Length: 338
Image (cartoon, rainbow, N blue to C red; front, side, top):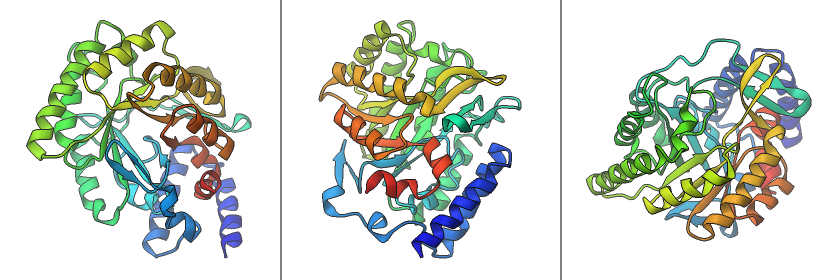
């Protein structure tokens, strides 16, 4: 039965590659949602019911295992419960901004099939944090994993006022989030990465920390805060970012976002195999700086068990995938956990 499912999905993935990437993603997510709702299990029972030895606790959160799904797959909060049913121990949704955004103009995403990579310039296309939370609330009863919520700023918000967008999103998502990811590293929102500069990072992290403390008291719960880092960050600035955010109580880092690049007429963020080396190097740098003082989630170019082992050996507690899920489908969960 499992073999038949694998053949079916291999054929389905092959067919979907002839469709535009965003339409293909829409078809894939809704197909998974329908199959899960019908009670059809797409992965082996041992993945869906992991052993006690696989379970880990990170920042007070109990994960069934180390493997999760990165933000960017479920941008609306409509599919995380179905994606979790594939065997992921945690799913990160978003990135959400205060106001809804259509994203950048087309063309804005392309498969780099030869390199098992993607390049996108989507630009935080999302329904806005309020609609996103409505979607999450309506689906959360069918979800049993750890939910991360990624937040960002609207493209028309100035850098000086960016903290207002992050604080607004935190207020709206705090009670539904198991952890919050602060995305200031996407290459597809103009000047967003400038928020990691000394001019902004200290004040921004201080504002976020102050809001988190307020919300801890309001909701009587502690929600870990992770900063998503760019793999293109200059070495001399990484220390400043770590110092500013750790001193303001951030719990850890997601290492790393997409790398800035240009391919076949699209200038944007590259993920997948072409990101692997940069992401791995960035993880080692950050791990050497933070030691045991922060939790590290590794993301970027992870597509094999060997990649997973390397990242875990270099300081990561958790692993996120994105592009390998796009190319390999649901069975990549088995491959990376077995």
